[in-house]
Image 1 (spheres, one colour):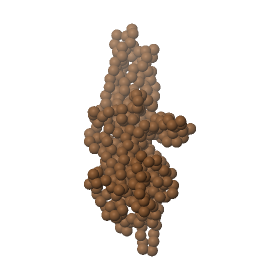
Image 2 (cartoon, one colour):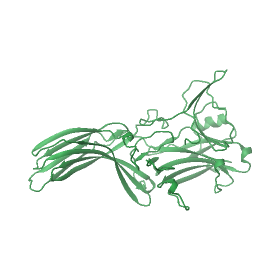
Image 3 (cartoon, one colour):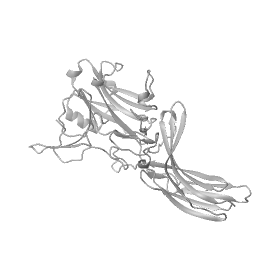
Image 4 (tube, helix red, strand yellow):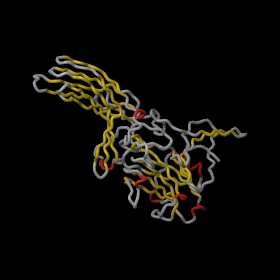
Length: 410
């Protein structure tokens, strides 16, 4: 039977994932009156997005419900894996895998180990009370030196898992943790590590430069600034451009572009840049004159869906996403473990007649605002969630509201 709620209250969604033989079921649920489906292993989480607050990270805690008759003499393990896939999955041949596990942690949920007991959270306490004596808690602490979930946009002909950094929870039953895991006895669920915009943004970005030309006594001066350092996804960016032309050259055009920089930190560091918004204006600045203009750009995924390799926020299947948020790295963090570091800059370029170009770059931060309720599982601007809603009414007027993610959806 499905979970039932007999009273009006605000509940987070329910996510359900089953193995092919329905012997292992993974569920992310709210705390409510539950009647479990026919399954032998179920595990429960309260959310799928875990926030990196820089000084700490939300713990990954849940509860496992075990059918001990099905297990016999086997144990139940839960693993949390952070992996960086840097090549297409269909290229994994001859025992070579274009994947690097940045972090793997294993927790023996059943039988429980007494020496590794962590005080249960409020969610776990309520679930343990509701599910009974065959429920066992598990707990993971994500290290602070691990990257956020990032996906590199695949090309039109790419198949398999996309490149990027992802986190996966897996529950399985086996005699030992080293034993080969069979798909029928395991279930996995993708979760995300996310960051939100800091409460105190940095100073207003401003850059200036001067350029002297041959046969000209005086220079061309360019000053550019943004109205703030922090922008939210989908928010327009205003670029203030002030040109003082004391030279004998003429400015023919002004080009403004927003560029995404992705630093791939693996065996060596490589940087990839991709323009995500641009505007070109025929605003001329003659010799011995000045110009002051404001240009507006809005970087969005909708206008960049054909660009292969563009960094996006980590996504769940059947869920839209957005451009990758800027990566905020805590001071002293080893960048070799960060996988992909994302940053943004606005480039302002003046095209000068017979004199080359004059340009400056303005770094800024692009992120999601922190939810007002501080719940990281709520949908953010720029993301659309595909949900299946099932409403069931019985003669006792019980109302069921469930959001289900099927086996092919995670």
